[in-house]
Length: 377
Ligand code: SF4
Image 1 (cartoon, protein in one colour):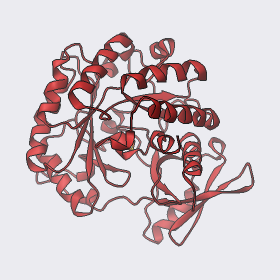
Image 2 (cartoon, protein in one colour):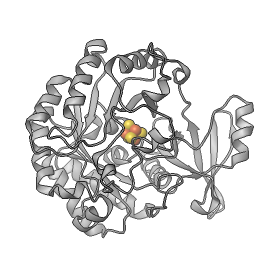
Image 3 (cartoon, helix red, strand yellow):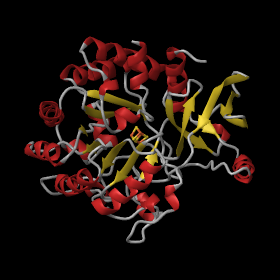
């Protein structure tokens, strides 16, 4: 069994490097009824990965699966009993063991209006149902999309529909619950040009979902708003936690990597976070922070402290390339480990506990090792 520090180390390395999957293994396992593939090619959260549990059977990781050996030294070996072994080709030794989280069965079912349920929402990790409620983003239309984003790709791959309604969502929740695959939900969306930035679309949906499934905590993700009142309205409509994602902390990198979003000054994000903390309460506000663009560790750590000192959970995640698109750099896992250890200590110091977050990415935790960092701090 692995201890919490080993879990943090292994997860960080897997988040950064991903795993090589031999195509032949896909067929081999298919014959045994095990579905393993290269994961989503579009949509919300880092793409092209699958969910695994580490040997402790509780640390979840969303790891990229590569079909190219040059991308990683970690190789997925054959499955023995419940666990796959991962071999480190560079160090010529076993890296550790992981358990593949199976895809749910409801994906093949259809909603009452005839849409495949997998096009409405997907299970992230074990029991976090996740959906992009509106699959377009204003920044894509004007050529200012974030460099790591795949939101409109899923539409072109026909793996989703443009917009989802609460009826469809409620039916998928019911199906997912039957399999024990929905205990909370992440709702995300593209940014809209209107003053509400898409909040109104959420508001309509949240009310309907809450009426049908009052027991499911809901997480929404929205861009920083000029009209802070919408944050109150989202809470009132049924959101339980919120993510207001800065994505990049370094001002120069922001302009390069998130050209559209970078028009919003950092101070506006601060105002939104402060308001969100007032409304949603302690440990229920997070911001995605991507790393691995060559930023200085010292500056990054200082910026992270600024975010944490406000009471916001920084959901620190290594950037990952979109399958089939231009390669983004691979994050150095040793640097990221230092970043996580530092963030873990800072969260303790400022009295923030990500383990108390009730819905969404922080609770799921697959894409960041922030929860594990908190545990070892
Ligand atoms: S943290 Fe979980 S819910 Fe959020 S994008 Fe990653 S896998 Fe999905």
